[in-house]
Image (cartoon, rainbow, N blue to C red; front, side, top):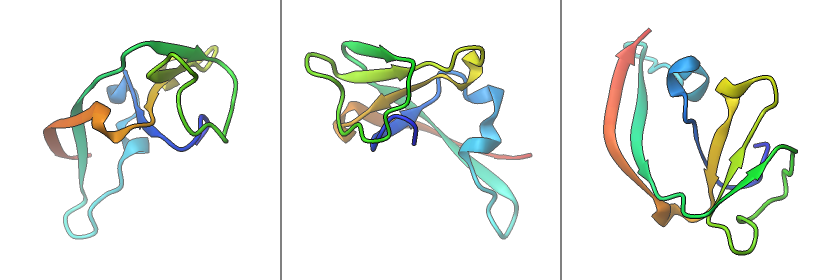
Length: 93
């Protein structure tokens, strides 16, 4: 957790989906969820803050950037009502 205790969403899950999943012990399948996320006003952050408990005042979410590694950027929400699981994707690698 680089930006505190929130729920993390990747805008590029296809770039490295295995880092977001674990294989099922029985059949080695993996599960990802495609979610609808309400981001509201987004605060962009490019430094670590492991103690973050919520988005900054007047913002609803955080966009964490990783300079030089755009595939690792992520959105973070701190209120679970902002996300709705939409599609469950089960796959085998």
